[in-house]
Image (cartoon, rainbow, N blue to C red; front, side, top):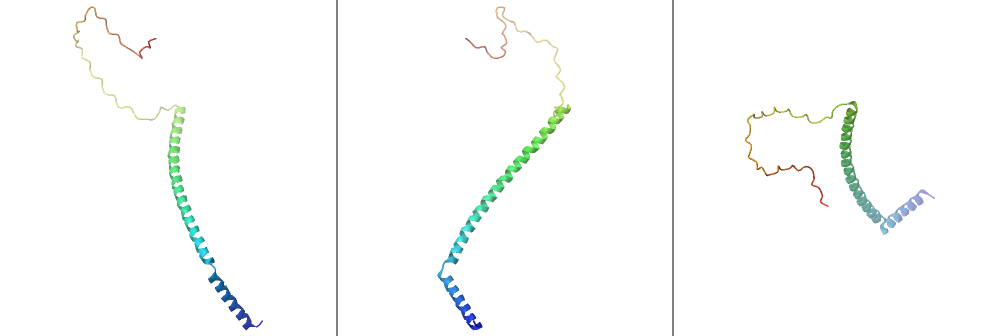
Amino acid sequence: MTKQKKAINMNALKRFWRWLLGKTTVDEKVVEVYEDVKDKVEDVAEEVKSRAKAVKEELADVKEALEEVVDQAEDVAGAVAGKKRPGRKPAAKKPAAKKSTAKKPVAAKDANAKPAAKKRGRPKKKK
């Protein structure tokens, strides 16, 4: 084949290809599939972000709990060594109030009255 015939065949082939693409809906299908995939990717990305946020919060909680465990382990090690428990220091004791030495008058008691008994503990069950 000569160059001229090859060029004509190539032009005819190109025209046929353009005509074929114009008649099919392949490009429309590609666009449709692209839109669907794009929507799905956006949904998945949103889900991944929300899960990552939840994991981050849980890891913060775990970190706080582990810090508390470390503090408690240090307290246990101190107790094994014989140290006293750490905590609030007791408030300074106030001096006790002075008791008066004056005698209080005793009320006249009825001779026939029994002294009141003090109740202690739970009442006994009746059978």
